[in-house]
Length: 592
Image (cartoon, rainbow, N blue to C red; front, side, top):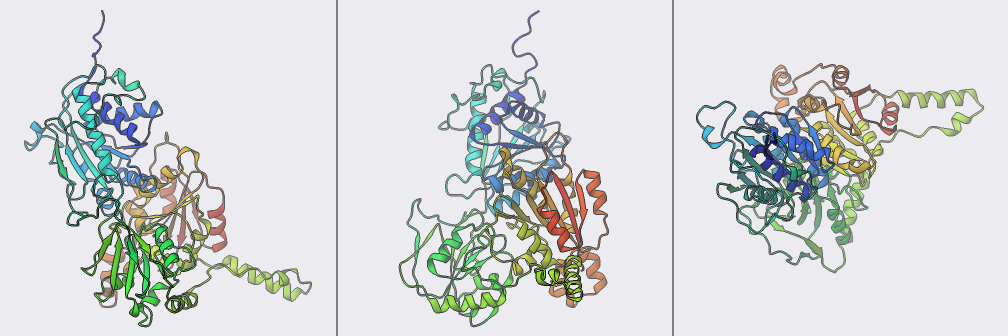
């Protein structure tokens, strides 16, 4: 008996194959899957694409971890990763990553399976209102039609329509049109059977590319909603508009916030203007970098005399910068980036690009800032050994030198020494990820300049998703055998908040990642709040500091991570610079 060619086939699988194939053709290299029943067609198609070498699949049982893993991949690569999950609360768990992607301008594709429309609002199991759930944050929101046909050769109207949806979703995630990059939500309702045999045409590497048409209108039944929020009230400049010419004259500083990039340093150099660069900016280098910028901005003779600030990125790490950009007597020019437009003073000028006009720099102004910078810079490196003393033939001199060297080696770590050690160990082929903990502020205060790729979730500056984001960064940066280690520096509460991200499937290649935890037993970042000086200490500890005594070595063992507890600078330097293979959790105890 001959079975029909469509035996065992399912419309859900055919539609999923068309969408996944087109996303892969467009450049999606990573799909993060959380298991579920309603999403099984998408998940199994992704697995088949991985088997054929077209994409890498990463399986995470927690959708929040999955979302932030995809966010990290998009942060590092600039190309959206796709997240696949089932219906119900699974979808809601993607909200934190979607909001961070929205505010930070990171491309992200959310492919959420759903019940068909007839099961919505009637009390069906695992069903809620998914279309539009992320709408205030998305660049595009699509509620796709329910697939209802089998495609014989990959050229049916249904397959063409799902490929068009993939095209539109991919383009919107990258910021097609006037919007910045960000999250896109494609809601995919499926009827049973929820999965079937893969269509034969899916095995072809370029499946569907010849029949996909980017000019056709969406098929009837697809609901499209533009995302809200970012840049919606702004009138963008015409594409190709000339950059704003910055004349010499006003006393100017260049401010580089999160994700600013190297352009901030370049314009600072060309204009002869002091560079105020956050540690998470990617612009913390160059000879005009200002050390100790908080004190300088607080000085009436320096910060008080600023007349113009040119801003890249999203500044979040100091009240002094926020106060500067909120002043109504300072002309603030903000270069449009991937995130929300900056307008703290209500009169900020948003531009796409700037250029420095010819003219002589204000050397007196720059000189004042550079003198203040030199006075504020600190050298946190351990003192060099007394070579003469160690080589001395005089016993007392030699013993004194040995004793001094042992004191250095045994000196306990503090926060400044910890961030300095991690900074010194990281190089351009590495990646450094900062959590939203006290340590990133310490690093911003004390570290010098160095051109190191840095990531941090500063769009909303949330504590969640730090380890998952860093894992995504590691996956993307180490693709195709590229060298380097991803180091994530965070506090104990940030680690515990994302502890589920430590779980990685045994079948997946281990990224080279070092999670360095400054463990001070709770949220000491709250000790710096004004309320700490007036509120009851026991209440502050209970609801803000939230003390914890988790045995991190047991967590590491349970999740299969190599664990080290380090208390001295010498041991930390050795751990950070030794060849790292796979996953390492490094705990550094700190005083409150």
